[in-house]
Length: 480
Ligand code: GDP
Image (cartoon, rainbow, N blue to C red; front, side, top):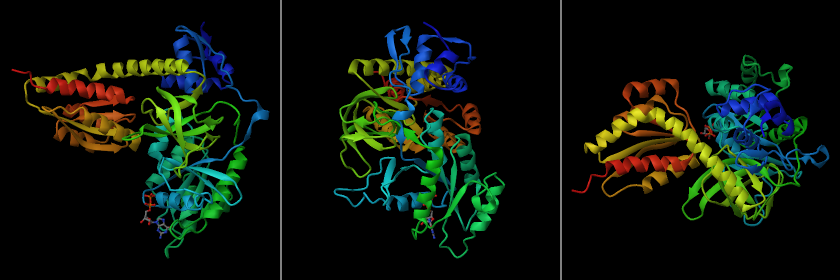
């Protein structure tokens, strides 16, 4: 029943070090020859986005139906691009400008929807997919959950400002992810634009553009004047050709969750990027720890789709809950199978969260004591999540828990890691910090410990609701 790390890697057509890395993320230190139990093996297999046939609770039959695609079935797919760069260098402007080049935008019924990613169709019929959340925070958060969705990073550097700290961070993140860079030297319309200075400065960070004898493409653009965009797109397509990006469209879909949120009218909504196969309306999907039948599928123009192939970003409706960005999604063949995988993952997540909870017990107890002493009639929370969708969903969930005797106050609902200023804010209002798929900086952690501020880490919204509810219940004064 057990399988070694090496065997598992072979069956998934993956490299053993990658399997070991995935295991480390699950908190398991393993060597290549080590045997894994069925639970662990299944988790790893799912992390790799494969489907598992599980014979019984303890016996995973690693059939991996359709997991390995034969070379002949592979077809070229559009590249997936993330835009990074220093603040104010023009990431958002460039994404807007590129989006406006879409020849499909003018087609019937197209109204721009921000769903977290969009695809442009060029005059030549070629397509490029852009992740619509610029910056490396979202990119890193996705990667930390094992999702590698980005093929190419477009690094925006303002020609009048040059290489700045976040430019350097972006270079590091792109290199860590093995994603090739294309440099977009932006704001070329400005009088003080100095593209050569940018090229020169990049050398220091081992980014050598073609003009300097290197291999990194660079393109001069102006996002606001909309110049150079066609050259940038050509550069992206050329890079895609070099990367030889391919996928098999004729198989059940697999991919990653890009963004998710709870919509008032439509329920859980997730934007997914199809990475293999074709996603069809009516398909049964497992996304992270959630599952459902795809009731409707929409593109970034709000148009209903019947199917979506490799590299297509689509918004799907019909999931039972809100999955986490960066988690894999996969189409399965039955509802019972979907429920089984989803329950298995929820259980694993809860076990993991329970471990973290025990560590934070001390401060929670102190809080409950304050509550019981009647010193507090309000639960204040600071919410930080990896993506806007999650922080919004948590805020909505938490606010719904308010009780007539105990108020819930959300001091801050934001995106990004926990910083010292978050801890100070929480300290000032006796608040709990809800960290959803984000970490605290080490300074923030130290400060929290000194100041006795409770930072609680979560990866599923259900657990946030559960904990906050406990706090609120504790705060309700006993009926005399
Ligand atoms: P981000 O923080 O990197 O997303 O940058 P934004 O896209 O928000 O742009 C920051 C500022 O630079 C805004 O005021 C933009 O109008 C301006 N900007 C962006 N691109 C250009 C450009 O090509 N030329 C000029 N002159 N200004 C630009």
